[in-house]
Length: 311
Length: 95
Image (tube, rainbow over the protein chains, first blue to last red):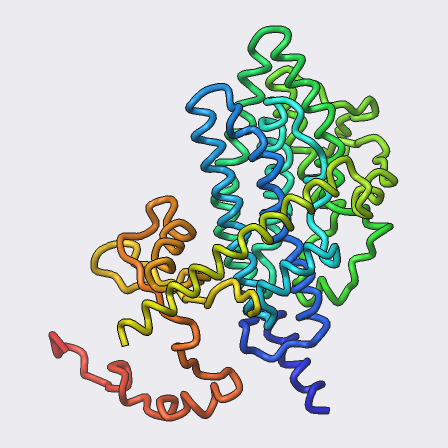
């Protein structure tokens, strides 16, 4: 009875466009779903540093290297904001990381693909960050205060990521035939995973009416995917690269691009852990955690010793 | 010993001189000095601030949403604290 009253007040608050804050009453299902989504998002930022970090030492010049370093540092920052925001729901970072390392928590499917050439760094910024921005601008309107504020901040920073990626692709596309071929090859390999990363199509992922009403989920996966495709195809045309989808065509009537069938089998295999780099990514994360343990312990011991001395 | 990931520090950033410090988020750090450096790296990578405060999260006491009504009630029934409560005849200046 009491809970029904609280639930009604909670829903009225959201319907009125107000944010839910950490100490406010919230239904268990809301808390659980947010922990799942937000930690998955945090893990994606951190795991996402790996494919790009792979090219920092091999960036073609100092300008590109400085930019890539700054971008990867941003991703670390995004992971931190998101872990912080998730902790406000009453779970601590140690437990969140444990869920990642044991495979209980997921991260974005996209980061299980390898970065084979320099052009892949361009493709990631342009396509992967581009797709992420579509998703994140929707989430910035969500009802949970700390998540929504983290999204606003992250979206501001992502736009540099997106543009630097497009610039890399543009330079390669205007370069030698080999460079252009390298850019096209990266687009060929990253296009489908990028549109898949926005999640299963709506008929396979019924967005519960409840999650929409609670403003945990703001828009359907297919709606976000459509917007991403509509905005990205002309960008590819502009630099003379072609989208690897023979069925892609512009529909005058609707004003949208229609795309060919998506290989969802591949998506679900990658999610299940059978993508090209799943094992490698998880091992890198869990090794970093284990190898960094003594540093965390030593820093804490030193801080405690200093405190004792001061006392 | 359990892996603590270090204590949490709340971060307040002053964006420009002359305005209040505003809550920006939090960081994990072993001590205040590290909290300060982490806060700089996490919250002011793009010149968002000129001054940072870090406060151990467990040192902050906060009002609770359930008590919101009764806690702030004393000010709700005192409209005479606002200048708009008073009717001043037209023509009276500088009031």
